[in-house]
Amino acid sequence: MPDWKKLIEGKIALAKRGLMPGKVHANVRVPAGQTEVKNFPVLDMGIKPNVAKEEWSLRVYGLVEHEVKLDWATFQALPQVTDVSDFHCVTRWSQLDMDWQGVRAQEILALAMPLESAKFVTLHSYDGYTTNVPLEALLDDDVIVAHSVLGQPLTREHGGPVRMVVPKRYAWKSAKWLKAIELHAEDRPGFWEVRGYHNDADPFKEQRFSDE
Ligand SMILES: Nc1nc2c(c(=O)[nH]1)N[C@H]1C(S)=C(S)[C@@H](COP(=O)(O)O)O[C@H]1N2
Ligand SMILES: [Mo]
Image (cartoon, rainbow, N blue to C red; front, top):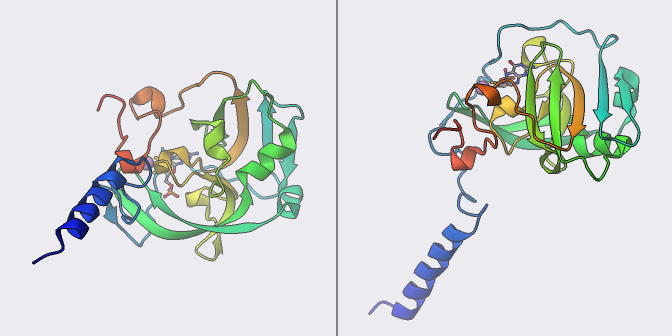
């Protein structure tokens, strides 16, 4: 005789887990509709700006108490971390265990002291690309302003010298060749978001296009 009580309790526990946001895919590394790759493909609009470390700077402006402009040396002097996360591109590839190295976005935002009214962010890149995220999303521990990955400085094609990495969103939110972080009160859709990509871009909800 099976232990019915235990079986039923187990089923209920499983069903309930499915109702808890964020827990549904807790043991699934590769989201639905994605294929795991290991060759770190390159994806962008084809313009790959050549930004030397000496010429690079990162500006934080908009609804902040202190506008910040970091040059390479100042950026390197900030607390450095390595965060391992998975990278999901809307074109259906995922690369797991990416060991992004750099400074937590929360660290850089703290220097600028966002105003109470700041709720949304536009990431600006040297190729003219933009993408939008809620300010809160950038405060997660796994969001890195990265200069290295896979044990090497970021190559130009992957957004070097510095890119943003927002692991909980599809990779188009991870702006390469990062130039500025602009804070505002209202949400401003970026390059892909005005072209039909989903505003929120959660890979585990398959938020690929806004009309799906
Ligand atoms: N500045 C900039 N950042 C960008 C893009 C871009 O065209 N320009 N493309 C985005 C897209 S669509 C993806 S999938 C990822 C790809 O990053 P990778 O080329 O390092 O794999 O970068 C994102 N960041
Ligand atoms: Mo992409």
